[in-house]
Image 1 (tube, rainbow, N blue to C red):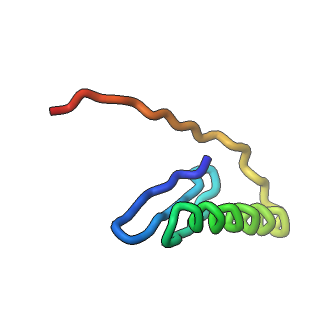
Image 2 (cartoon, helix red, strand yellow):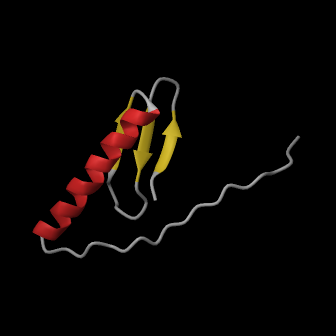
Length: 68
């Protein structure tokens, strides 16, 4: 799972299952491309270091609330 956050002038992304795996870009499309590359590099680094690659364990839900 990738979490996207829209800021005032840019987008951020992070991967809850891969601590420290983050990216930032000017557009949604750019940050998605950058986080894809960051995930690949992160996993390659774990493998090269002999570290286990954590299995996906995060989930997300979108809920609607009635707020005043």
